[in-house]
Image (cartoon, rainbow, N blue to C red; front, side, top):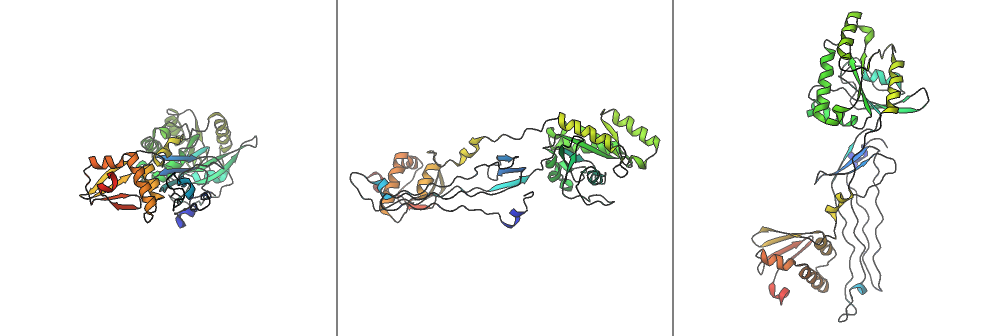
Amino acid sequence: MSTLMDFKHKSVFKAEAGENGGIKNMHGRCAKDLFIKVPVGTVVKDIKTGNIIADLTEHEQKILVAKGGRGGRGNARFATAQKRAPQFCEPGEPSIERELFLELKLIADVGLLGMPNAGKSTLISRISSAKPKIADYPFTTLIPNLGVVRKRSGDGYVVADIPGLIEGASEGVGLGHDFLRHVERCRFLVHLIDATEENPFDNYKKINLELEKHSQHLAELYQIIALNKIDAIDEEKKKQLLDQFKKVSSDVFEISAVTGENLDKLLDFMGEKVDEIPKPETEIVVEEDLGAYNNDDSSFEIFKVAKDTFIIEGGKIERIAGVTDERNSEQVIRFQNIMKGMGVFDALAKKGIKDGDTIIIGHLEFVFYSDEIFG
């Protein structure tokens, strides 16, 4: 699996429901886990909070994004000295629902970047087995291409051909955001310059400015400068370009992706840098991110949404409401006692609730009468 394309056709996933509790001290069976497969390099974000839940950079890596509800309990669990055989059991709890945003960032050791038509696709086709679309016009490459480059030792590393960047890429011009995110995981960059352009050095500065605007991390990534199409310019321009670029970097290579000139020197140097520069650290996922979805949290909030309507939200109170059958009087009384013990009714009184007002908790909706609650 290498893309997120499957999620265009299916975007809603639902695990099986846990079973209800039953007679003879029977607990409900917990539901099976639902696993959703994504490609390596997928970043999982919570749409509601914007928090990053996980950065999945390794094969078989797993992360819990939505905790399932507990199975229902049998009636014996609710027996008391006064009521030895309660006439109700507990249904399975509802599970957590979350809306997630999936973003794929390629995992490559080296990123090839440059202006459109700089020759990146030609270069990756010469140094690896990748077969990108190649044509003599800008924006031939619309999606990143990956290729494996073999070092003289036989070891391989991954190179990503990033679609051409233009001025304004950091603001999304020319799908800049989509392209720039793919170089964030690279060890370093090979900045390919079209030596036949009128102002190659200006193009170099424009691309670096877009990297800086996108993130400080990209701006600080080590770069090898490769002056491409060197076979198509005269010696005078070649000397002028070398003088310019040697002022900003000592690692400048004159190459021709078409003829193969100096590609061996560039590849040897790239191989050395792959060994020398470690992979960037991925974002650390703090387990407390899931704390916002902890349905055992006893805290709650009360919202007055109309002059006679109150909505109550909270992990524990909504969880218990989810397993309460409003048609069963014993369950309703039990739920009211729990609310009383949690201080919900006292808090409602401070909010100015009066007889006849409506209380909504999860799927439950009932009318408040003080004499029923406080006697």
